[in-house]
Amino acid sequence: MEFLTVFLAEALAVMGAGIGAGIAALGAGVGIGRIGGSALESIARQPDSLSDIRTNMIVAAALVEGAAFFAIVVCLLIIFV
Image 1 (cartoon, rainbow, N blue to C red):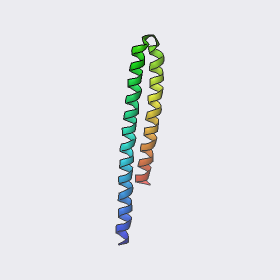
Image 2: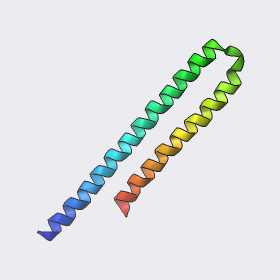
Image 3: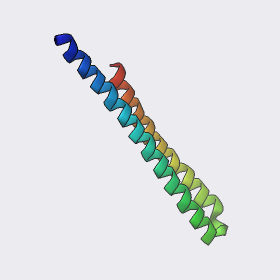
Image 4: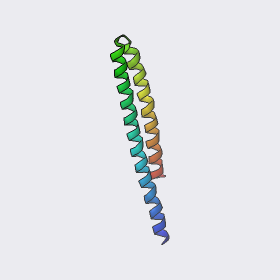
C-alpha cells in the first residue's frame, strides 16, 4: 500500500511538471506573438524607426523566452529531484 502512495505522488509530480512546461511554452508563444504583431503595427505606422523597433522587439522576445526557459527548468527539476 505504501508503494502505491509513493508511486502516485511521483506520477502526480511528473504530470504536474508536464502541464507546467506546456503552459510555459504556450505563454511564451502567445507573448512573442503579441510582441511581433505590435512591432509590425509600429513599423507600419513609423517606417523610419525600423531599427529601434526591431531592437526593442528582440530584447522583449528574449526576456519572454528567458522566463519560459526558467519555468521549464523548474518543471524538469520537479521531475528529476
